[in-house]
Amino acid sequence: MKSSEDLRRQLRDIDHRSYPAYKSLAGSYQFGSFLLVIDHVQGDPFASPSSLHVEILHKNAGFPAAFYETDCARIALQDHLTRQFSSQFEDYNFKAKGSGKSGLLAVTRCGQEVLERSACQIGRDRIIARFHVGFPAFGRTINAGELEKILFEFLPRCVENSFFYRKLDAKKTEAAIHLAEDQEAIRKLLREERLTAFVANGAILPRKSGVSDLPLQNSVPFRSPASMERTFVLPHRGTITGMAIPEGITLIVGGGYHGKSTLLEALQTGVYNHIAGDGREYVITEDTAVKLRAEDGRSIRNVDISMFINDLPNGKDTALFSTPDASGSTSQAAGVIENLESGSRLFLIDEDTSATNFMLRDDFMQQVISREKEPITPFLERARDLYEKAGVSTILVAGSSGAFFYIADKIVQMDCYRPVDITDHVKELCKEHKAPRTQAPNFRIPEFDRALPPFRKKSGGRDDRRRGGRPGRDEQPRHEHMKTKTFGKDSFSIDKETVDLRYVEQLADSEQTAALSCLLRFALEQVIDGRKTVQQTAELLMRTLDQKGWEPFCSSYVPCGLARPRIQELYACLNRFRG
Ligand code: ADP
Ligand code: MG
Image (cartoon, rainbow, N blue to C red; front, side, top):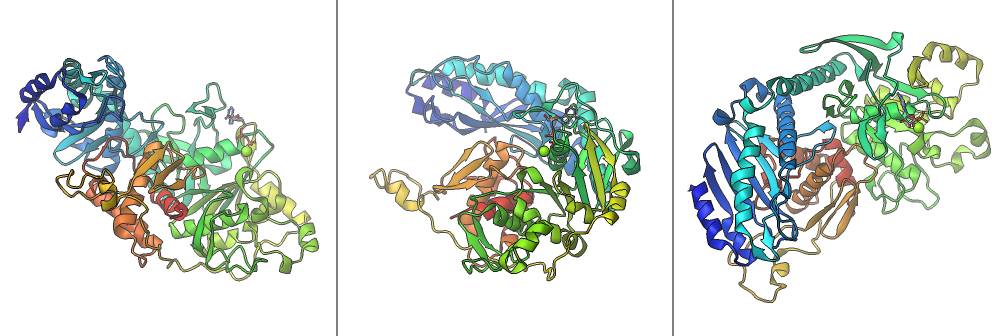
């Protein structure tokens, strides 16, 4: 094992040489209380910054074992430490000077959700923290003195202030873990009590703006209608009271601008835990919940959507439906089936983002367009069976049609941002109106045995390496992975195929998108063989991630910048891949 002094000597040796000499620094160096590993050195000062990590043994870090013994506590602590490290870095970012990305010092910037990330991983005996450094240069000439400043002055201070328990505010650290444990407790209670979601009194649901996930100042705090109120006892906080939404079909109605979509959006991010101060700390949703929406233009492959769509005019088989360019209604139908397959137990639907003809058809229209001429059985006529026969509840925002009143178990009216339970009142009114047809025959849960077709690479492999025309330049024949590139949260490309995830609304972070690109690459290269089903593939990927961590999904080292997606988003990704 080399020491930090070895690194210092190496640095001084390569000073003023040309940039690629930095590559010689890759390796591990013992820095007293932590180990520094230089995983990957950038090719030039303008390229993506270099990847490094530090390892701190628990005996040096000193956190109480209870802080990382359970997954729930460990993930909360990892998140807390990453935020700590990130704020430490802020003081030193670009303090070292030079061209391009010289002096950059960066770790994940966490949002409002608490996610499991490659940025910080706590194992049995150590904490691993990954980050990026822009190795400094004048033009393309190594400026080793500046890197020495980063690695020997800035970094040890940041590491110490972030990963040594005695340096942290113990109360805050403990509070982050206790909050996560309370959130976990509510999630467990939801299952036990046959509830789908809980929104605590006092929760702040609206966000500052369409581009800021911070709470809206001076907004109306949430307050449950008395009839839906439940009080739970949590392990740390004590009692908490709020609105409990039971399993079944729940309708959220109300005038425009009264806060319907805001409530639904809070519920859809309630599958994740939120940090203290977010306002949605105690908005907890069944963790398999999926937002379903229309997604014109998406690709669909071999999905049995016959529950909703039959007898298409072009004669297409809807029991094995594929299209590179779905319509609003076919995309939403596929979404329902794919998420029965993904194991979702709760669908969240907003009429604002749904295909109207998929959701319902009114009486008059049914008279004019006979059933034989209409391929669509609307969601309205399947929702009860979805709950009663498939165990999937629905929370539906609907402001424009009364037909849904007939199938709802609970009806909540948003009135100036305040929920009111109007179930009994509306059920009385229902008696005075002619009921629409609310149940279609022949409900059948499809078989989920569709296999994923094997994938033929367009690039990568040996040919790519020979492209330089100098065979033998690479000393070791190395396995070349397919190329992936992530575009924020919205999409990634793999082997020149774009996977569009723009409308997969419950992706919370671009690091999840990056992780999905690694999972899909692994699936294409090592799992999908033309026989394994979508379900088998998704489950195998998640199991591998749980048991072996990020390593199997990365080339030579694990970078900072990956966050664990849910299995539902993995399904969404497998289902949207066109290759
Ligand atoms: P709807 O879906 O019923 O038409 P929205 O949920 O889109 O209404 O909300 C309309 C506006 O009201 C949004 O700008 C939102 O930020 C704001 N809003 C929502 N809930 C609250 C609240 N509790 N307090 C203050 N403003 C809110
Ligand atoms: Mg709305």
